[in-house]
Length: 134
Image (cartoon, rainbow, N blue to C red; front, side, top):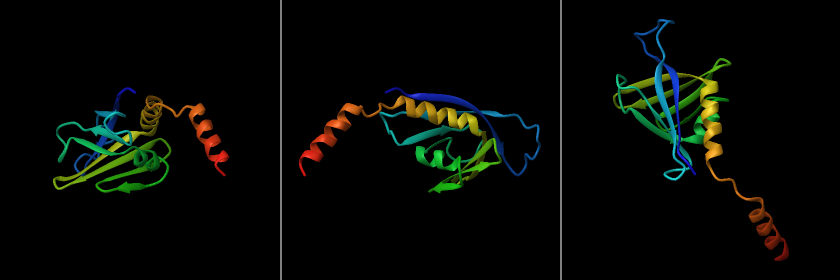
């Protein structure tokens, strides 16, 4: 199993920066199946308040691309047809980050490809054992 790292361009949404031409910033998406196969990490650029790296459930990111989802201090929801918003809450404030959905989908696809699938042979052996015990 290998670590997946992907840089994505995102827009930081703030009260002061309502300009449509605001530049996108690099955000790092990271998945380490050996450290925690159920979590992903998002590294944010320095000028934002609060922590600059967030760890949360990979399932939350996947669910949030289809419908609003939240867990603890992280919220994810689709924004129109091609964007998604990830909102991070901390004692220092709220960071709202807008991504292209396709970048997050590509990252999720890569995380699933990085994990080892369960071999069919093991499943069929287990099934055979269970069915003969009846």
